Amino acid sequence: MTRPPGSGDPGMSAPYPAPAFEAKVCPPAELERRLASLPRPLVFTNGCFDILHRGHVTYLAQARSLGAALLVAVNSDESVRRLGKGEDRPLNSLADRMAVLAALECASLVTWFEEDTPLERIRQVRPDVLVKGGDWPAQSIVGAAEVLGWGGRVHSIPFAHERSTTALVEKIRRL
Image (tube, rainbow, N blue to C red; front, side, top):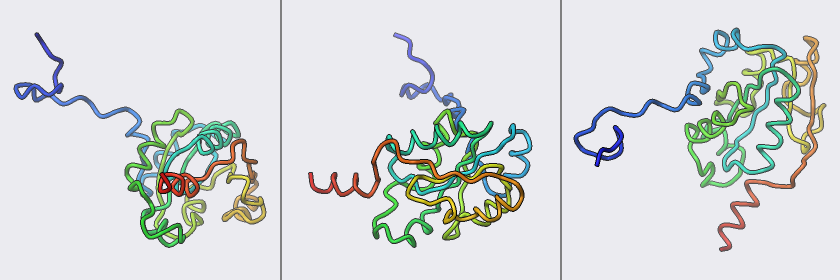
């Protein structure tokens, strides 16, 4: 019986290629170059995205519909810890969280930030549209004043599905 390369046969050493979505993960230093090839308007959103759930994917698809490309900026592991979500959070590493987000069709690029807020990343990429979930009033969204100042739009997308990673983690711990 023949087996495909990389299927576990010790005589087969040719690896499978990396999934195409991995190329959507973009270091902050490369953002300006990579964004130049994306269509505008550019939509920017951010978050921890520790355990991706239906609320996240619905929100991200809706955010993407507001422009031609979606950049998702993810809190670094240390940034998540400083948010006070619990000492064991994030449950998934930054690399894993970004890979899962990059695999979504709606995400054009995924990057990260180390700071407590994404303000520096917003200033760096100058998005046309800034988006957060419905728990953020538009005027309270970090970067709203800057985006509005250069003629962009700011949206707070109402929750279509009441989900939260914190509630999911608590539910799992009760089991």
